[in-house]
Image (cartoon, rainbow, N blue to C red; front, side, top):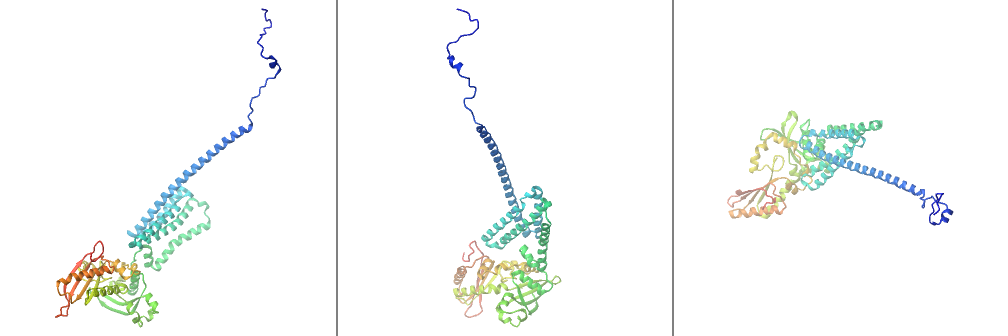
Length: 472
């Protein structure tokens, strides 16, 4: 085999013609456009932006939840404290009412320092206070026996809520945003604070009894310079009614304890106004309102301080006389009795309302009933105004009276007539819709043919019961 001196290797035929004749192509088989890379970059940017926005929204939701939780906490806190502050100054000490503005101001300052302008205290205070007001109003519609008390809670908490909202907003502005406080805003704040103190002070000095009753739902100790003024203020406190007294009707005397007393005739001012009668012609026209006259007694208690025990029969004139007449007439017909007398003995203070008729409770309470200090306290604090809108039956049912009934008849000649008469009496009281709130005492008197003087033949005393019925 001849040598390959040129070191050229020979290969099989690999189509050298194609290799030698076609140029080599070094470009990629598929070309990717620039728009593709731009799209990828934009998607990454949008994703990053979406993630950032989502994180921001999550943070805002989390912050909103935290603020809502804080608001709920503050609302409940303010509601509870407002309720207990009102309860405290009503039940325990009237001076505790001063804690209310102190609490409002201190809480406003604390949260303004802590949260600056973002403080939620003003909003929480008005929501909490109005919440107490709404709940109290709803309870007043259910609890008929304490409707006045719950109505007071509703009004008082609403007032605290609105006044507290303004005060809290003011102090938050002063503490947290003092630099932006304008002169006009400052002037309005000062005027509000002066009015907040000055208006109640003015009305208290103008009419302390009414202001005291409005704020504390209690009767103020009457302050007067004369006996006449003291009597009129006491009657107004007791009934929330203006009275006019006939000064020419005054009769002086002494009571069983040898205390000086004055008796006079007084009238509801509205009754006189409707009849066209005024104080100047009252004495000459007294006969026109004879059925409306109220006998008022003033008994000396402490003349050095112009203090008196004031008794009156206004509730008798307004309700009890008519009530007694209805009941006694009904019992007369039921029993065919010659005479029926009804006395209403109250659970307490028979000196001022109802009848101090002898029964076991009267003897037990006698020392208290005749004690001068107890009489003065009752005279000063008694409030019967809420009963004036009732009819006579509702009033007697609401107030705790013991029914003391004296029945005289010629039919009580034998013992077998006693219990049937008692049963019919009790059945009639139930039939009339009367409630046995404090028990009863029934005395039967017979009129013998040979002696027209009534003789006591039978007596029975009963207590109240769970059903408040007489027949039981």
